Length: 200
Image 1 (tube, rainbow, N blue to C red):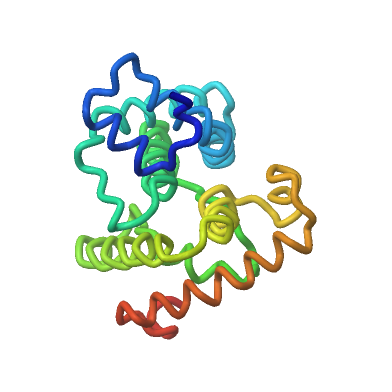
Image 2: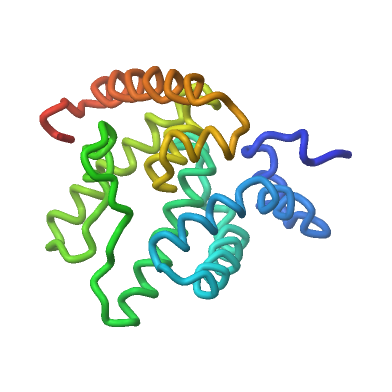
């Protein structure tokens, strides 16, 4: 069977069921390793460390496969959250305050503010975690092509031009997907009780 034809949730079901030969995990690795590596490299500024984080992230995926819940959000968001946390831990080990991807004044900046600040107090972190979980849930309601563009933007820190190059799509198509995806994401978040003032 060609596992590459299975969707992420089907692959994770196989991983959670011991994944004979590790083929399902390998298919997920082939699908997302480049993006996860890019995210790590951007946060850490060190390719060698980023490669170590990539291996650790997929080990965590295998180790915690039973806890993955597709109803809470797409696999990619879960993987990139794991990757980001590992990067933050690595930066802490270096005794350097994490410098998370700088998105400047782009229109998706408010959503990045939903991610927990490791330096915040417990109450703030709990609130941020709740918001992040709702963002993951909302992302799961989007069409895959729109979700992919938003994930590359929010979690990968890629520009629209870089996303177009990675996906082999015209910039106009990427821009349209991002615009429509962001509009749907905002609507989904509002349905979950998050008003615009709550997230920027």
